[in-house]
Image 1 (cartoon, rainbow, N blue to C red):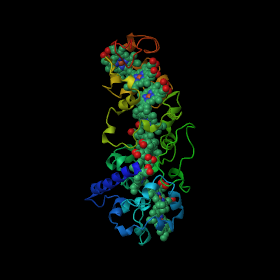
Image 2 (cartoon, rainbow, N blue to C red):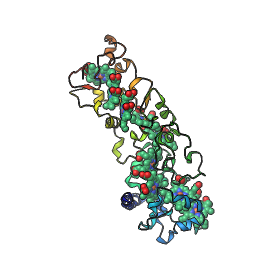
Image 3 (tube, rainbow, N blue to C red):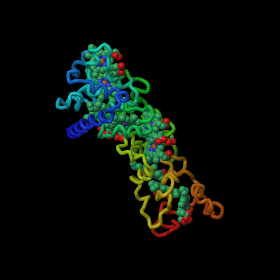
Image 4 (spheres, protein in one colour):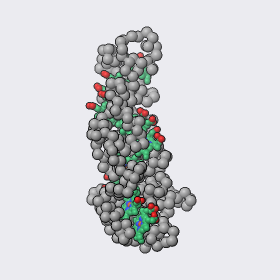
Length: 319
Ligand code: HEC
Ligand code: HEC
Ligand code: HEC
Ligand code: HEC
Ligand code: HEC
Ligand code: HEC
Ligand code: HEC
Ligand code: HEC
Ligand code: HEC
């Protein structure tokens, strides 16, 4: 109930915002937005009318996460039932030229415009279009399946049947699979990196991809530089100080911050390190490579043990 009311407010304000954003150029207006705009209240025929021809969808939809909310009679008519998503039924059943929002046939941009009529609290359309997914042909229905267990959906549109990691955490959120299995349908090599010796515990079900990746950024700023370090530090605060003596790459004054030395997904080397030898350090300290031989590594030989920074020693020999 609590969430329902919250979402309702978001829905109503967003429907105005989306409409406004497209005013002025009717040609660029996404088809779903146009369809809703040209409708009068009489064009909404109600769920029961759909059921006359789509019995199966109506029956299965009552188990869906959307159902409880969408059947609230207090909602504005263009947010209710099947038509809240598919658009006014009259244009589909009455007119010669059947018009309906058919998500699996629409271009990705039109799908996101249709879903974001209501999901403005998750993100704005402009934010979505700045993401790599929004810019490519990936759409909301590439990852989410709205009708529960729709057996007719196949291939890239169906549920992902096989899990890449047996212990992966189930995802909910109407996703087609647990996160790593879902992402693996398009990002196989990144998911494969989690099979290397040292890895973040995604295969063990202790983490998911979206702990680090904002799939739905709700601020344009989340694409800015520094995001890698910020993310890492949200779980590993103790590695980032502040220290009396900071190590520049850790402090993030230059380059990729934590990822100057680490890889985020997995490595063959211990501790997610990019290198297992002093070569890791000599990518920057080239002078030391020639005249400074601490042993195999600079940090396990007992020397630079406080590699992230120190409160007592400017050369990171003690914590
Ligand atoms: C009089 C029967 C009838 C009614 C009532 C009806 N439909 Fe349909 N609908 C059809 C037929 C037939 C098709 C398949 C032909 C086609 O693809 O257009 C279809 C197809 C669809 C599709 C898929 C379109 C596509 O291009 O893949 C959607 C979505 C849909 N209907 C939603 C609805 C909704 C929502 C309602 C209620 C507002 C509704 N229908 C009411 C007969 C009906
Ligand atoms: C929250 C949005 C939403 C609601 C509400 C909704 N649908 Fe859908 N519908 C979709 C999406 C998205 C798809 C594409 C397949 C999928 O994701 O399950 C779809 C697919 C369909 C299809 C086409 C299936 C195909 O194989 O192409 C029909 C028919 C349909 N819906 C009818 C209905 C009916 C009838 C209702 C009301 C009981 C309804 N939908 C409610 C979003 C919705
Ligand atoms: C008419 C408004 C409306 C439309 C259109 C709509 N949704 Fe929703 N959706 C909601 C509301 C409200 C909820 C919250 C329901 C709940 O949690 O009980 C919800 C829930 C969800 C959830 C689950 C959230 C959770 O926390 O489990 C997902 C995922 C989602 N919608 C995706 C979509 C996608 C994808 C589309 C487009 C195909 C879409 N929605 C279209 C209103 C809408
Ligand atoms: C690349 C896959 C992917 C795509 C594409 C995608 N989502 Fe999601 N979505 C996720 C994942 C993973 C989660 C759960 C983790 C999270 O909340 O970030 C999620 C969660 C959600 C939620 C519930 C969380 C919340 O913020 O309340 C909603 C609503 C939602 N998505 C809507 C959408 C809409 C609308 C679109 C299209 C504009 C979309 N998604 C596109 C993967 C995706
Ligand atoms: C339907 C295919 C598809 C799915 C499913 C998918 N992605 Fe993507 N993803 C893409 C495409 C296409 C791009 C654009 C860049 C490219 O071609 O690699 C992209 C880009 C990305 C990027 C940005 C890469 C960059 O260069 O900035 C990240 C991060 C990402 N995806 C993570 C995820 C995660 C996490 C999931 C699962 C929740 C996921 N993706 C699911 C297709 C997909
Ligand atoms: C511990 C945080 C973390 C986790 C967990 C994580 N990633 Fe990443 N991922 C990153 C960071 C940081 C980058 C960008 C820097 C880099 O290339 O290492 C990245 C980059 C990517 C890219 C873009 C690669 C490229 O070459 O541009 C994709 C795609 C991606 N991740 C997918 C995933 C998928 C799928 C999962 C879950 C199976 C996942 N990530 C889990 C932190 C993470
Ligand atoms: C959502 C929380 C979270 C985020 C964000 C996160 N980590 Fe982790 N990290 C973990 C967990 C959990 C472990 C496993 C600790 C364990 O096994 O006890 C871990 C382990 C590590 C390890 C040690 C691996 C080993 O083999 O001992 C390193 C190094 C590491 N993370 C670096 C990073 C970097 C770099 C980033 C940013 C790209 C990052 N982490 C982001 C949660 C996180
Ligand atoms: C200059 C290279 C370098 C940078 C930059 C760096 N690290 Fe490390 N990190 C290391 C080395 C080397 C180790 C292994 C230390 C060891 O084995 O005692 C390590 C170990 C770790 C561990 C595992 C600690 C443990 O006790 O198992 C975590 C977690 C970690 N780093 C997180 C981070 C985070 C977060 C950042 C960014 C804020 C970061 N690192 C930046 C070199 C670096
Ligand atoms: C991405 C570049 C980079 C990497 C990789 C890196 N460092 Fe540094 N390090 C710096 C910079 C920049 C400074 C401060 C400026 C300078 O050289 O005086 C610094 C300072 C130091 C200092 C302080 C003493 C001094 O010379 O000022 C030590 C000790 C040190 N690094 C050790 C290491 C070790 C050991 C590794 C490998 C685990 C390593 N660094 C990896 C860039 C790096």
